[in-house]
Length: 232
Image 1 (spheres, rainbow, N blue to C red):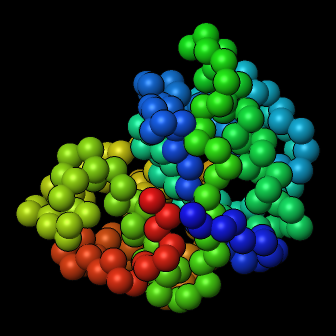
Image 2 (image 1 turned 180 degrees about the vertical axis):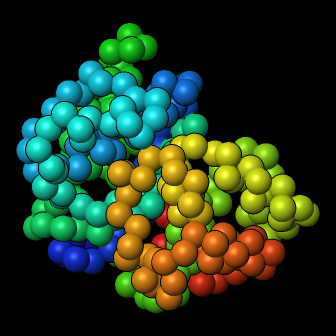
């Protein structure tokens, strides 16, 4: 069992959680949109503005209806899958990750339970977290997080076997429930993530460069660079 680290301000952490008993936690498109909304809405020192709000596009996020947010964390990248999610977070203030995850976990669970008329825990205990300190981890962990949707069409990628990298890239570019589209210059929900740090890590701010890096990594996936930080 991975012991949760002490969260240090300005440091980066890979966060992971799944549904209790590996159950589905995103039943339909509306649930994924709610996940996106909650990532944005709960990343603020202030109380949530409107937890009933639903979004279907960037312009419907609630940032246009209130003062600028005072962020708890920087969300560097994210991916939501049917029964789990990944977040790469940098803590902005003391206790920021703990507070953000408390608000996010409670808010999404309350939404889900009310919608589907259920009670009890939705997520599998406390979220898992690992400190991401090595440069190789910071370089390749976003690729790993953004590759997760391939489980839906070509799960063999985890065995380092992707027969058609171009098909993989096309699929990822159409998967809305991660930050990948925003990284390759296809605006999806850009206000949710703070991407400058990782662009600087890669040595270039251009979306074309990130796309090429992803293509290269799909063709030659090296999980040894990620030992200890994938969490699953």
